[in-house]
Image: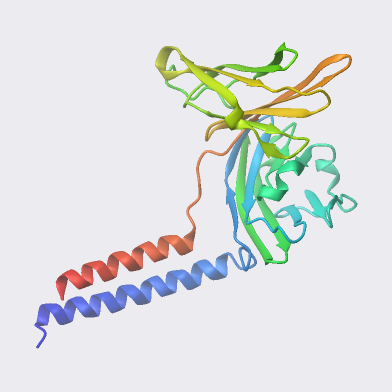
Length: 286
């Protein structure tokens, strides 16, 4: 026969489960219209006035068909950006986003629907919604963007810098960026063939003061009229450099984008963890 303490403990478990269920219901209602049958993940972001930012949105890619991508801002009329039926569709785009937004079109096939936004203003702050539609169903999620002045005055502050891409020989590319903290990762892409060529590159990090490193990466295998991309990124920023070798020489283009300040936790995963913890404690006290 259970003791009074065990009975009380079991009653507490039931109460906690009911509270968790209520919280789940509240969260479900608050995010109605967000993630449904398609798993969409977003990350809130911070941007600098006049700078660029990436609004992160990833999803499970669909190999059967191209995915439709829709970006909207809560409270704004029109769309921020739309990619539909395999092509860009901006006929109903809000004019204030004209020529300021774009996608990583070469990365849609791997589930990257992140939005690049340029020339930021304070008015760009707000809540954005990323919606994905394909044969797996429709899913959506939201993120917040805060835009303001960003300063880095402390020696322990995060650091990131633009990169340069140069040719070291007829078949070699050199990617260099002088200041990064925390230590970033380096990825190389063959944009023309939409393939990852990182395993064919060599990267080193030259250490400096307060953990800041210089990033140096090389690729050997350069071909004419093939576009390559060097990507240096951590959880704060992403620097990209595109290069293509033509008969008239090497043409390059670089960009530095400020990323998010943190990753959001999925409410469903949080509730699952709480339930596991509750039942684990209950089993120990039975």
